[in-house]
Image (cartoon, rainbow, N blue to C red; front, top):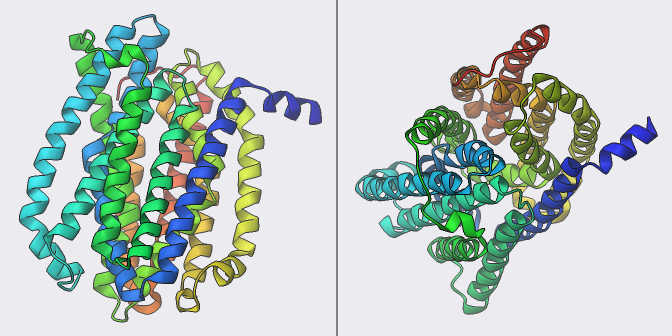
Length: 431
């Protein structure tokens, strides 16, 4: 047992996972320091305004990313492996062109709708500039994600953490500069977030492999495969974002007392900081599974994943036990309401770790419609439970609704995985 575990830790997949994990640890550690600093410096009302603007930023990111990152990883990686770097570069250019068009449309759309958004969810605080800055920051974040996809395709995993670390260092430096200048307002903070994201994009363009800097050839089948896979994945990612972000708006709309948005947003940030190893492992596994040609190899990879995923589950369970102490030590007393929400969200992270093998298997056979249907189920269940539980329990009710819906999601995927395992050689149909 110990020998097999030691051999697993020496595999290339494990080494790449360590690289991403350590980079993410540094990056998320800095990002958590920024959030922690803001929680101490901002009032609950100002922090709530910042949280809603950040939620808009993440939603914008999903609508400009539209599955392009995962498309690049899957199809460009295959072209690179086949010795066709020019065709891989063509896929990069297609994704970038689509993203630029989406940026223009989305920016114009939110500019027109910003007055209504501010009036409904932000009680008129700030002006259009606040949301425009969130949009610009989301566009920059989407550019970083596309660059990360290029690095994954070229198996240059170490460059992904470098971009994230740089971005978060710039955020921390910017926030400290605002504190020194006495300008710590949501609008100024969002300016820092926008500038830091675009600075990281510039760095990423410098670090890109030479092959991906060229325009390259673009075959009709590349366009068809990229748009088909990207379209399905776009639906999945948008639904995933709604699961994570829609709750913020529901919480603001359904709960009478203030401060609950701040509690839930902080709970989300704390939860994100403690699932780094899982995120690193799934990123590497997605690239690995995308280039695997045999179902037997996928099953073998799934068996190897049980040990590291078990370690993730134990680590998150320990974090759940210490959630109250963590919040008490790191956050002001006014955010004590975040503790029960943190515990519920940590439980959802355990479900995510347990469900990773099923998702990877479904992605391998390209049955994205199964995952898409699972996410639709999550949105419906979470929304319905939110209307029941948010008025009673606020942030905790939303976190419980999210985790309950997530349990159903992973149950659906697990049932489909069992179905796949009965089939010794499932076909890799296009989504």
